[in-house]
Image 1 (cartoon, one colour):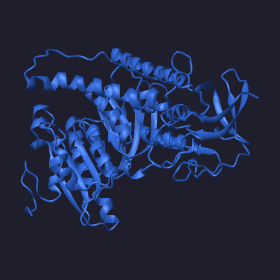
Image 2: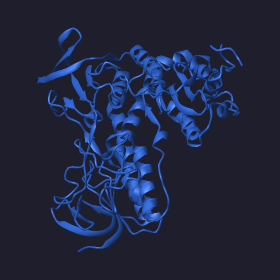
Image 3: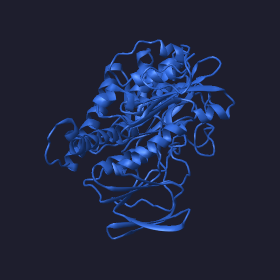
Image 4: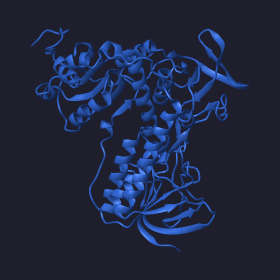
Length: 479
């Protein structure tokens, strides 16, 4: 038997490593188990987010956006850049360097905070034990007073499009292309599909996105989603809704894809195909046979509002439990659980989790949509302000998009904020903070915003809730 710990965390992704660091900071003897092996053959921390998700995709999104700006937009600013080209291999090398720096940083944080790093595959065993199978096949059993499962998620594979290395890939494979494909197919118009499609569209690919659903970004406020779709179409993304893929076949260096739409059976050919139809919880093999942790039919671990499983002292956080599969949600759950284990009172407000689509412009939202409010029978008032009327947006050459605020018609309390525009992912924090403090639209309207900033659009949207916007004509009469 190896050492006993106050807390053992299974998984070193954004839920797990944050939980481990927090627990150690609170004086708990903590270990974190991780099996992920990086490109250099050693175990790396950070999970999907740092290794093949949030961070590398943003590195590519930023590089590709700067390329588009230099190629198409600099001239409007008076900058003569001449011929601009992209070295895809160099872009990928930079992405890998960023990932290496950050994953190595977590290892350093573990050491600084006294977290014991255990390499191997962790499994919850009976009696609050964790079995860890090392990469050499040797199994070691550890005792723990508390266990936190933070095993994350993996991409969903679908039968019509089996993965073929280098040709038909998931989101991980799409981050490893060494050259720009001429024709790129993307299955799924969700967040991941749109972001990856945007990267390669900017670099010159003819991108077709096949989405089985009738609605575009159905989780987004309808007016914001409609505007986003229009913007992306203008950029060159061919988004086909109600297009259900029925099969694919690799023929030489091409991928032939069959799908059905309103016009019947269709067929199209790509050089590469990315499958982005969602993710599923990675819980298989994380729980030993005979351990009665409850899972639902999709493999998610049942937890209460404070991430407790049905077994005392065993918690689960992040992508392997209910709620949005977002790194920041996982991290906050990890902090909450560590605090609870340490004897503190803690809870998480699931109504104020921000969401961001990192296209350009970005799409961000928090709270409920106008459609959700109406479906719940809530009488709302809405204020919106276009970036086309923003002085800073004009100066930034980024006038596409809108900021929108939804407030309760009776109490004026902010119920949701929705933005499509440059830096929307940064600006949405204003809505998160406002909703955390139970702010009214009037609270934001009475706040002094710096001028000129993109955030002034949020201020004007708050003013517009009651028809008091200054820098645009109001639809309602001023009261």
